[in-house]
Amino acid sequence: MAKDEKEQDQEYKARSVALRLLARREHSRYELSLKLRQRQIDGEIIDAVLDDYENEGWLDDNRFADIYARQRMESGYGPLKIMAELQQRGVKDSPACMTEASDEDWCRYAIHLREKRFGLMRLNDDLPEKLRQARFLNRRGYSGVQVERALEAQEPDDSVI
Image 1 (cartoon, rainbow, N blue to C red):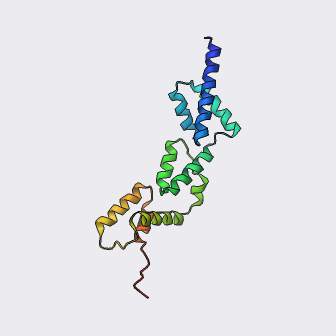
Image 2 (image 1 turned 90 degrees about the vertical axis):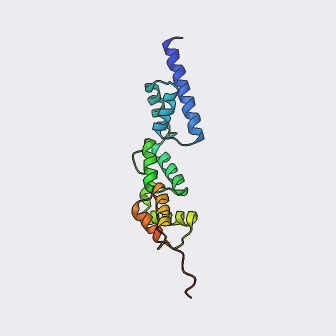
Image 3 (image 1 turned 60 degrees about the horizontal axis):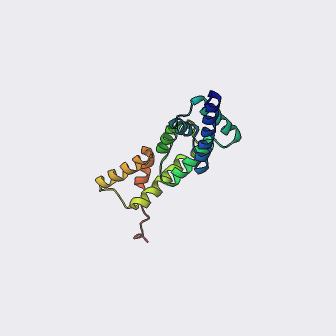
């Protein structure tokens, strides 16, 4: 096989694999690049194909980041975890949906997650339970202030009428 034919074959393979992956879900440029490199496709061909796909609007890191962040927010993850996951996927800028959410919004998300998982019972005297819930919220990517606010939240007292 001639060198020209081999390059065309690799380019065809890169285009078809990348398009198939993008048809399933959004990917970041970095993710697609890694997946194409795993298939032993030349780096120059990968860059050329991904540049073409970005120009066509089929590949967009900002769109990927926004969709990914919204999905993770809906799944109960906090800003620290979401940003760390986006950085692992090669996205450096904060998506619009995360910059629009204020610290107050993130506190509400943390409270909602705590209520869903544990309920909003009073934790004044139960230090082990308070620590357990705080660790859970920290693992989910909420900051110390957001965790503190979530742990302070409690159900309205129905006994006082």
